Image 1 (cartoon, rainbow, N blue to C red):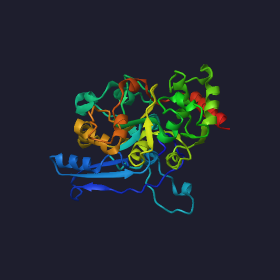
Image 2 (tube, rainbow, N blue to C red):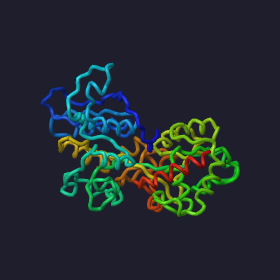
Image 3 (tube, one colour):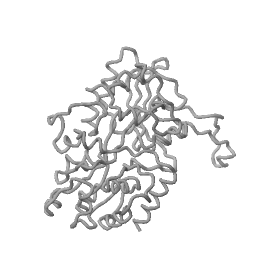
Image 4 (tube, one colour):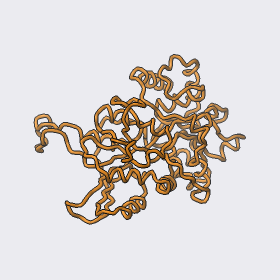
Length: 385
């Protein structure tokens, strides 16, 4: 799944709905559109059983995170007039904005700036005023990630725009048999430049990810905003490109399983679910730090504040619930969970138990100025030729 792409087209969402409670228009409802596989059904069931009032929960899973972003856009678009739509479609539209059809939506942190800038979401109010009671349990790093100004830039004096409920990272996944025959297994980004793996690597088709890992190898930040000031960056990228068989953000695991490649860089949300099924594969978080991603709850613009949605967020942040989300969706949690080796398979345990030293060296991909984004895209296109 491509966690970093911005698609220009719109998508039709096929939603399978998970419903709890009896029908009836007068009944209190909580409507959530979420990334498929990011919340276990049993967690929703436990939340429903613990509620004191009569409530209908409507959880609609969506396949791709970019579809959720587009849904937020669609809710805020002004409908076209019949003339603008053309003669082929005679569908009456009301003037004004479409009504959001969810109280909460999953959004990736990478999309947060765009959602704020485009006024697709609204901030959470009075977070410190105990409406989100578990807010204080979050590490300061998570609070900083979602506290932003109205342009979507990190700002300690800004508003809280999201509630993280799981996270992961960019990892190196490899065929242990092939690399052990070479006499080593990867530990850090620098291993991608080793002899013996020319045209045996696949990398994500993402400028920020690929250039970012090279920056990390050189002791720089993923969020470097002027690449011209990094000596040897292009040279390192050109050498790395000679090791690469292909770039893909979606189809990098199948060639690894088929042994067409021996090593891939990918997202933990893709990698962890396959490790248990393919014992020849192993994964590692690079010791010098890596890129991180987070799935957040956000509130669509125009939705009236609802206490029930705050209760759901607090429920996700309770240690026992956070542990279930982490173990069952094979992801990390922003809440301390104390996962034991008996809770999950060994290949996954080491990846879900965060090394604080590596965590402190890792980074979220933060918004960059347009000039910097152009630099990344131009350099990435150049080295792939």
